[in-house]
Length: 308
Image (cartoon, rainbow, N blue to C red; front, side, top):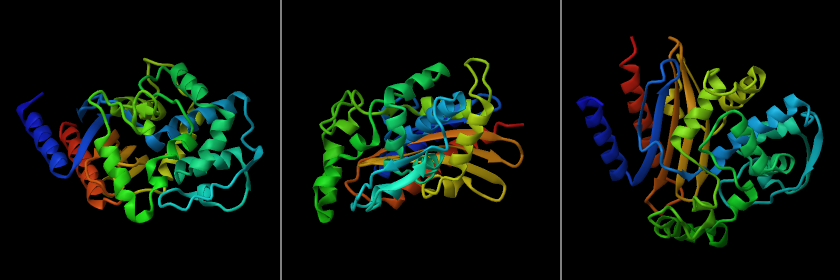
């Protein structure tokens, strides 16, 4: 690591600290494998990032003929009224939706009720098994989204939601255990920045080191990520007329994540993972979202400056 890179990483760590964030970041050039990161092997709860492996496993099972993507299933309404959840999670009445359309809702708008309808077809353990078939390690899929969403936030009045965030910040252990099960890495769905970058690389390239994901399946997952509607974190720093940004966010209590791939018009392509924990007891933190994008972009810029 050069002195300039060390200086940059030190500066970014200080910026994250001053902004009330702990961050685990990794940026990888998908053409060369060159990468730069901040604590990229730290395991953190994955929140809604788990919907990427869920989409991959579901589409692979459809390709194998184990599932019918056109099959219409009944999905019970979520009737959620707290801020955050989307789609069917807020519906008041049951809906009948095809499996492939549930994939769109789960991945593109992060609809947790749609995701749980898919988990009913492909349980967490089976999703993990599909990841392992493709040689992908470091992402643990242990539970459904329904279990994920039963947090202290749902037990507080809206005016007291900051108390749930204070609990999330203060109730952890040095070994990343936690009094809130969804934040305990021994019980939650978890992953590392490196593991999610590996997953993105497998979706964007055919690697010689692992079994290749079928091109049609990979293309479908890429399409869902390209059409992600939640674009307030990293997208402002990566999306332009000369680049395509495809991603998935994850949010839970004090966790703010986003992983994605930026494809530049000049042919350069970078996989990026930003997994963060906020130390500020507040639900809405646009400054933290902006800081995540700024840090990720500066890491990408460092790699991009090395390209000849």
